[in-house]
Image 1 (cartoon, rainbow, N blue to C red):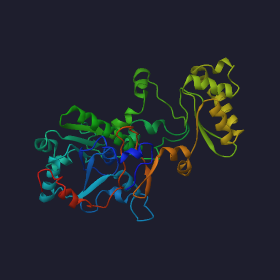
Image 2: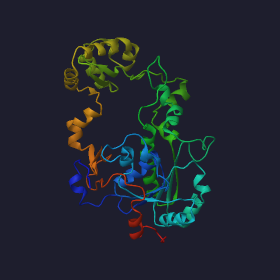
Image 3: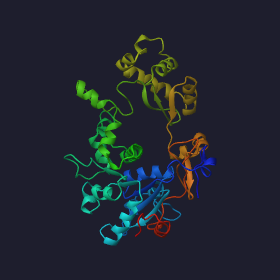
Length: 389
């Protein structure tokens, strides 16, 4: 089927992927948990997606559909490279089948609300008694313990409660949530990382990953800042309190560029480009921050006097940290995106390629998310039910 279009793709069919032989049960739904299992699958893990028989994972029907076959685009991306089987864990026979899968697995990923797995008679004590080496990855909104443990877990809740929304938006506007499933995406990566750390330990154990804790990790030193000084990072649109200029700026043709000067050497080159290089007020971070309005005004005027291509050419000549603001139409046509194969075709569906390039043991993309219960016969025939149904 489809293969990744990046540099290692020529070797992908001929090299054993790095996680070959790793058996993963994906019992999770929607995004964060399935994303964790997806990253493992992309690098060779055998991932068996377990869904309920009555419709399966709700991600199948969420948001945009493929106009060719009506399939969900979220589903095709997030559950690529996985085999599917439908099991009702409240049914004795299906629960027995599930436990047989556990017997032969290395990893189980689940994102039920804490306590649900235990109520099904499938808690970590039961699973580890059957398979002492199993790594049980539990993804939730707030973690398996604590006063909020039983609350539902959604990305927007974590983004509101971890401080991200408070610093997002214009100074005189309301807090803002990101317009993508940011927390689910980042938590999937964090969970995949934690899974590999647990596997490296060689010890069966529970890995507790949650949305709030993961998002808090990417908030930089803002918790330290508040605890030590009582200072809160303000909402500044695209700006940062410690770096000027920084933001998006409109050019004369109506298009935009994004510019950052968070490196001192870059900032000095940009100041010289703007004709401010000899002014002592702008020769340090502190000075530029103190005179923020002057610097930002000059940056806006400079961009407004040039088309985006002209601005980008001069910014590139100054070795500035700048890039054109691109939408997905621009991304699709970008020569670097094409050369690196950042958008791959999997089963005829364009989607993001592999998240990283491994020169000796590349990952591979074999198929898009598959129909409900599509692989039951193969799972049984190949003996993936550890001790049998």
